[in-house]
Amino acid sequence: MVLTCNAPLYSLIVWNDDINTFDWVIETLVEVCQHSPVQAEQCSLIIHYNGKCEVKKGDWDFLEAMKDAILEREIGATIEKTYA
Image 1 (cartoon, rainbow, N blue to C red):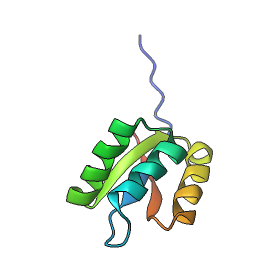
Image 2: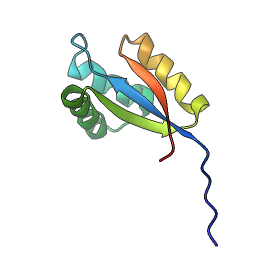
Image 3: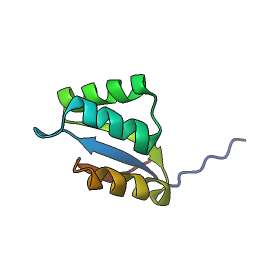
C-alpha cells in the first residue's frame, strides 16, 4: 500500500512585462532562486513567449521570501496553489 500526501504545494510564477531585460530577469533568477545560468535563461525565454513561467515549487513560507525579493527588483511574481 502506498500512501500519498495531497498537501498543497505552491508555485512561484514570474510574469512577462515590457520593461525588464532578459539579462535582468536571468540575473534575478540566478541570485534569488539559485537557478543555474542556463536554467534561468530557459525560464526567461518561457516567460517571454508564454507570458509567465513557474520558476520554483515548494511550501508558502519557502517561496514567499523569493517572491518578495523578485518584486523588489520590479519583476512581476505571484504564488499559486498547485497539487502536482
